Length: 87
Image 1: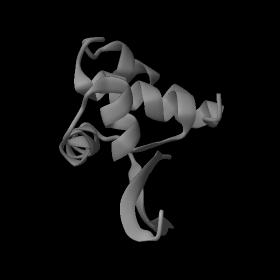
Image 2: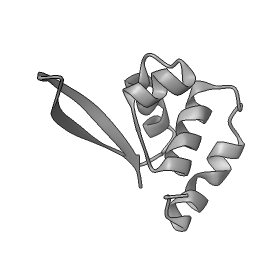
Image 3: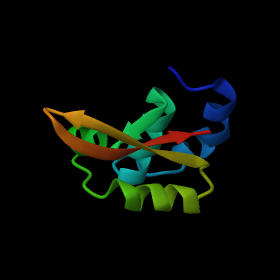
């Protein structure tokens, strides 16, 4: 995927030790497979409503996650959301 091999290798053991049906597993796997995740991705793909809480959990487990705020207009309305990336 998009993920740098070194970064993927760094978190593979952690991922393998998680329960595959857990939200933290789904989020970390998505980050490693796709490179980033938004609250929309988390909700639409996995039904996860509190992505920020799961990001906090993953950071607590030692995952280096950056967040960037994106501001744009959708149908003339301003929207903003966080894009989380792992490194």
